[in-house]
Amino acid sequence: MRKVLRRFQTLPIRSRLAMLVAAAVAFGVAAVSVTCWFIVQGKLYDEVDDRLSSINGRILNPADVPAVLAGCTESTDDSDGNQRPSFLYLQLVTSDGRTCVLNQSEGVVKVTAADKEAAANPTTRVRTFHNSTDAKGNDVRVVTIAIPVGPGPNPEAYPDVAIMAAISLKDTQNTLNDLALILLLVSGVGVLGAGAAGLAVARAGLRPVDKLTEAVEHVARTEDLGIRIPVEEDAEDEIARLSRSFNSMTSSLASSRDLQQQLIADAGHELRTPLTSLRTNIELLTRSEETGRPIPPADRKALLASVKAQMTELAALIGDLQELSRSEGQRGERVQVVSLEDAVEAALRRARLRGPELTINADLQPWYVRAEPSALERAIVNILDNAVKFSPEGGTIEVELGSGILTVRDHGPGIPADELPYVFDRFWRSPSARALPGSGLGLSIVARTVEQAGGEIALERAQGGGTVATVRLPGAPTAPPEMP
Image (tube, rainbow, N blue to C red; front, side, top):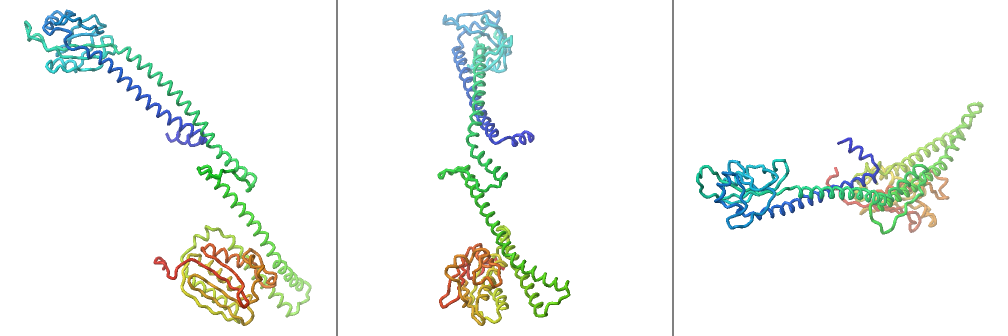
């Protein structure tokens, strides 16, 4: 059975559907056919029983029964002078099983226990219908009726008697056999037709699936993510939903691939400058060692400082690229309830180390959000780094946190209005800031981290000069009960 099921599961879907439809129709047709056959059988038997019911027990005069049994002679008239109806089988049976044929029949009908019981209870006059066979083994339908026998010359010699009338079931069985053959043929034609119809319906219904399969195979073969499956706008069936999902998937994959290619191109462009500078400085140091011409100490110190700064910039760029390349699933596994106040305080400590000459004022209120702790702290550090980077020496930075709104205000030159739409793009850097260290990925990472936490971020020019960064994050002023 398991082997058959495994074999069935390996068949094409349309073949399985056709077989299932044919099996369902076959089951239904079989149930209807069997029910029809039994109903017709019951009706035919009722007709035979109605014919047998015409026997009223007066076919034979009860007073003649002792004489008939004594000589086993045929009597054709009842006590009223009526001609006895002609049956194929007609015989008497006693309670002890003896029989006496009353007409020129095909033979003796086999006596059953029900016939003996009917003969043993003459006062009940109950009609007993049942099937039996004659001496040649032919099937017959029998009715047995008890006959009360009057006193004879020797009553003890004559037990109770019943009369058995029977009709051959040959015609009935032929009719039933013909009906079974017709039902079998009709059922076979119906099952074959249902299988063919099921196969046609399966082909028509699975035609969109074939198109989808061809599209998937085309994408796998050519890596062409621009292919789309046409779908009617008002279609809501499973095939339409699957087609829309496929189109959405290919669109997302195409967009992801474009972003990946753009990221690789931008990263290569950004890496080229520090790597070129590093190679130049290292070649100068190497040539100095090879030629024996020492570089002046001040120049050597500047070269080493430049190499260190470029290595730091490369490390930061690689870290930013790793952050951008992390998948949504990797980030989702580390999301938890985080105290935004604690994350801002940790970021402030790092910012004060990077700008010791600046004054950073902070007014923080408790607020709890759902985010990845390290990513959230890194985003806040990036915001503060920008404020530190563009603040004038001895300047002031104001940081406020209340009701889920974090604002960071610096008093630097500010961002030109025409550059504000691009500040969150990857690798975008203001022309006025290209001389400053950075990769142009900081604010892009901030924007994505805030969006993943369900929040919003905006940069705008502040009144009186400088820039204001505003971050809005959903949350609550108190930690939920499950938070430790």
